[in-house]
Length: 436
Image (cartoon, rainbow, N blue to C red; front, side):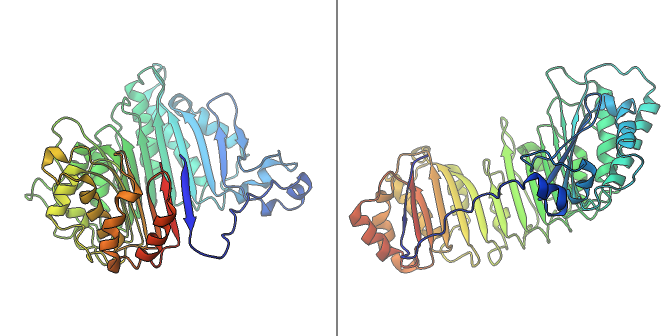
């Protein structure tokens, strides 16, 4: 992407900080506590366990175990066969020599489980017991861990049903009593059975899958009062399951503590949109990102958070704009705390929906409304408009645009005469970026 950037400040902008060089081996040996070790990867899919320190450019000259206490995130890779036959548990025990806690400062665990397609050759009860032992040992190694992310993946062959049972048990044990969880499941993985009994008091939940898991619905419902961060990447039909209450006939779903909501809803043919009965389902929302098509039947996600919403990212098309304008979502002066707005759009269907003939009038009104309420505005689109298309509309509303400090718009060049007009229209602007 080519960009033209104009800074209106006379002071020079500091250059980007360079990444620090890897410490020399002598420093590694003398002061391992100063290493910025962020991730530890344990790989025992094969016959042994390998420890890798991605943050180090050179191999440390001290034994690896001396660095483990500085690790903040543990990344572990395995497969369901290794868990079921007790290989994962015994290798963890033998490698760490019976220590119950070596990663005393690791607050995050990332587990990648490859679901096996091979047939189970051992007793199923014994395999499940081994899976429980593995999960217990793993929790002992990260005693202060508060967040667990688990990805259940597969190769080309479809995994067997029992592989999902093994993965489901591990997920249930590791998610229990955590404050933050993340789950990503390949769509061809057979349904996992997740015990949600002890998954309570969550403050963050991230979920990515093309499969419909009723357990995720239960987790969201049981934790709706405590969640502060919620990220969902799934089909709109699943979002309906998570948020809707049977078109007003069920109990209200409300998230009084939620600060960040990120939704990527993917449509299938005739997917019903989300209906939320609560008058104000997200009253304290500070960050909202709708990275797929707008999935709600009305303005539910914007209701009641006019005083708190600080950051907005939304994918916009003409249908969404008509819907939200019908509820005055982007009325000038509505949002009081907006700091950063990004609109990614494609308005090529405007004419089919009877919007004004001059396309840039529609876009200009949206941009002016948002620019009058935020200090940073980015507009990304597929349609062929340029910055000069908006300048007259901006000039007509310049009395409302004194708050804006950063503006990013489509364009290829900034003519000299436009620079003077931009400085007049946006008196507080410090950065204008044109991108094509």
